[in-house]
Image (tube, rainbow, N blue to C red):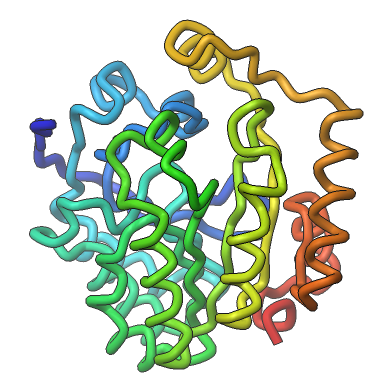
Length: 276
């Protein structure tokens, strides 16, 4: 699929994060080439990149200049890279905004928590190693089966993501796996979970699990394109968490829900404590 790329200039780089585990959010791009059908981010994105999700991406070409100025006057904290776009989507190979931002933030005393579906993050192992304990990387893997194509049409295959986290872990980078969103009727069976839990064990990665959180656009698309009703129920989620907890315990994997993560990070008040 061809992507329309437009360059824009911004007045702000860092924003206060709406996610409790981060102090700040840094999104080098608006829109995302991956075009995941379930993604909540299109509901938090304005204009053309949201309307044409997966087809149009805006590049914040002056991001590093603005960020360089901002970090001088901000309280140090945890930066989520990124929260409404993938920081290592294909155009990052050209613009290198995530790489430069990662280096700048670590050098300025900020902890950077990267979340991606892309193997391109391997390119920046040198920067991540320089960051040391000031950076961690999470790979989102919703399933290891080919059914990922239904919900993540333009993403790297799960086997590529698994290879990515193995390389990061081998290089000494702190890693975690995000198993989410778990969607009723799509990736909510043991056949989906167990290979990811084994990968978490192999790479000594924490496993964070989360349910699908319905947004109007995502629900409509899944109903029309996939002919499923993806709205989770409390009973369904209790069953899923129970199965996952048992599997994680059997493999000796540190497995928590997104809600547990929020509570833990609030209690510790620092990702640096949380990740020790």
